[in-house]
Length: 311
Ligand code: FAQ
Image (cartoon, rainbow, N blue to C red; front, side, top):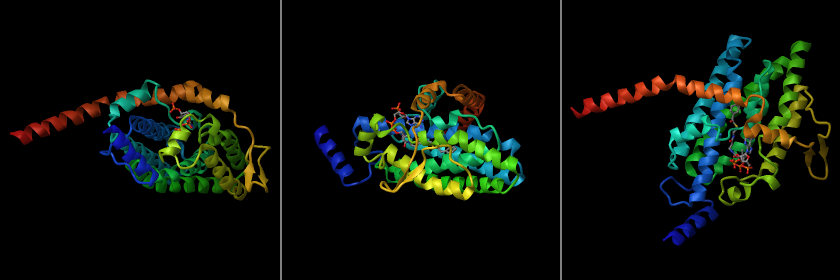
């Protein structure tokens, strides 16, 4: 009965076990996972656009090859995340429709422009840095396919983070104009990265249940704090200033204190009114429409193969 199944599910969660696609699960658990995993997939796919903007203008062949590889990794992450979400019974078409119609969310960070080459390095250092902080605990998520996908995603994100930091180190050893470019990119991106972790715990409607189900292991605010603490020393080595006058070590807490995030601006962006929302979504819809012939051809080919096999 439903009650027995629920009890079995709860016991598995309490014992820190994994839930697999064919196992019984409460509908709300399924729905939450589809929401989070599909949003994560959309973020990877839309996340290709800000950096993709710089592939044709990378300063050297080496930087271009690295950037192409990174953007391809993001496409791969999107694809395995869509596959993980499909195991919960939602089709890829449904998820893509939700993205293209503006119903689904994706990470707020990708709705800001990449204005100079240093933005590419800063995305690697800070955006991938924040993504790793959030995703390492997801390797222990209670839903098996999501947890397993995260293992590989995190390994690749870790390369992404290093390549960004290294690119910035090189620029910081260059001319004053290059150093200014890095500082400008850091100034524009720092606060947006802090917001990537989601609203404060007290204003996070999905957190309590997400933690109870073992989907989220560390809260939005705790991850944000871990990110700040890890990043401050890296900024020092790099020689950039993080644009927060309230950022300072708090001996009693054993953490860095930081200033107030502009949550009104965050929600504006999440709700579709950030500087690049319209352009990002427009680019995705156009790519999907222009790729229709490839999907049609693949289906026609598969049908023909099947007909041949039947003869
Ligand atoms: N942007 O109750 P909570 C990457 C929404 S990394 C937009 O706290 P939850 C790699 C949230 O969905 C980026 N919306 O929600 C890369 C919810 O709305 P809903 C992607 C946000 O789920 C790097 C509402 O606010 N990573 O792509 C954001 O418990 C470089 C209330 O929030 C992931 O998706 C936001 N920043 O916690 C690619 C990781 N924050 O759905 C290219 C997996 C919150 O109820 C280049 N996801 N919202 O309508 C998660 O860990 C969680 O979903 C959180 C949000 C932590 C994002």
